[in-house]
Image (cartoon, rainbow, N blue to C red; front, side, top):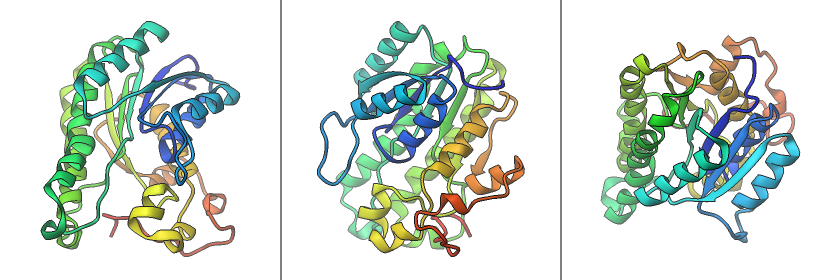
Length: 274
């Protein structure tokens, strides 16, 4: 498939960060983008709403449908699917980008926080995939892309934040399982994860603060890697892709422009990457 022109792509968590950047990258081809997120009003610390991103998508050359959705709620997701198909006539791709993070050990993770991470990082991926499936089966370029890591069983990745880790690994296990289950339906299912930390609100406010933010890469590298996956044939399935590695395999050799601070050479390696 040469590009994403007229393809309908649902992106959860698309009001900012990586989701927004993927939306804009796909919009440049003239794709139909569903900006699915909770944020409808500006937040003092977190810029971006479904409506501001919709405006950006249109400016970038795409069609936009902003939909407020809570991925924890089955009815909310069902309404999103119904609105998408009524507006655009189908669904070609689903990007499960919405996520919840709390890097605390088991002893100090409130069960309510674990429930939230499980609901968003794991349950929502299964639910969104199930409800989009009848429409994906009708597409000739169907993809599900999960923003989740390679399954690295090094014990250090469990020691300090087991609750978060298992919800993200479950997401990656869904990638493997759904890829095989949906292979006969010609639906590709892959995961994508960054090699370095990405300058997002999660990094700035949850994972490491401004210092870590400044030795991270911009979300554009994830958007370019996501685009490379989405424009692959559906035979490319069942992979846990790392952004830089994938782009190098596809012939990219220049990465300096992804630095948050120009000239940075020593980036911080992301979780689950040895």
